[in-house]
Image (tube, rainbow, N blue to C red; front, side):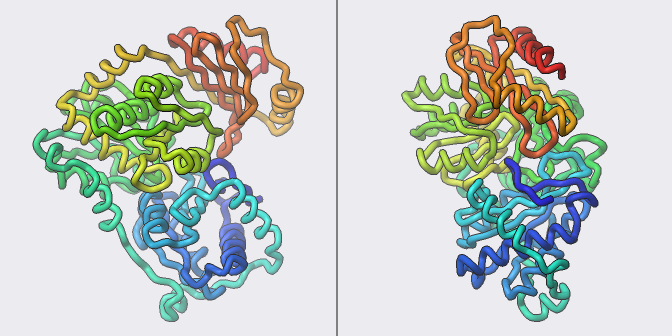
Length: 470
């Protein structure tokens, strides 16, 4: 029942996400650490605000303690990037975060990080699954939590300041102070409020926050910063005349932005904005990395600066690996996750937010003006995203039809190439594209299409929708 997808292991609470499974996974990592002879350094664990997250972290720690492996527990709900930072900074070989990120509230899960603070890649997660299958003494041994603390095998820590200082030291705080910005925050009932308020108020921004309370149901909405979920933030930015609105998902590794005019900026726009800013205004050099479902406008911007944009499969581990291999300036995905060179090796919505605020201060322009400048210079593209649910039987039928038999509908555009790197992706000669793939975190079929305008993208999605009887 424990299988890793593109963003770690996720399961419905009380179904797959149970104390027994959490402890089986923890025991598997214990066995892996011992086999690799890194058990003496211990492991760092964090948790978000989801139902059972704190308890799950403690259940895991009790297993590590029983196996003689010290568990360092971040003792307050924390952003996922904080755990990644701590693993990287203190050179742990492993870390765990209890979170289901942006999934619905009925889910919880575990992300595993490896040396350097990276997301565990496919080789690592396959290895963990192998160790899981070898755990036979169930229920696994656990040490009483209080006993673990008394014996020094469980230690509670709270390294937030260390993480925040690393961000503050890289941002031009004086420029931000001089601008006197008003910023609206929407942590979406998640874990980013303390971090973002501390950074922004240190830079003398006026900060106002909505949806900051602890709510394991996330206000009845999906804790993902999308155009649909950020309508309240849009209205707030307009009513309070804010310079921008910033939202993060449940564990703060993804970002959503509302500009000064109340427009929702798609994560694709944010990725392009930051790359443009880092290269043009800060003088950085290097390529960009995106996954197969992310805007090709990033490619145009990279090409204009004499750089390259690399395409990888969905899953941030692929982005961070390619960034490391190519020394890329930035890497990102259309769902709002992005990483910047010189920081952690994974997604960080808090750091991305700080850079956006710095961008407004350094350029002296409003966010809407910067975006308009980019569109005038590089042109615009429209992205349409659609999700479809299915039965297990229907999933197998679609997989066979598209990916095994490679049957396609009649396509009324000139096709340049077809890729099966991750699901199906069709590249058109005019620069448009469509991607059809199964989600790695939820039981969904996802279609992404980017064309010259919204109507054309919707029509292309409709062709596949009709063909697959979705």
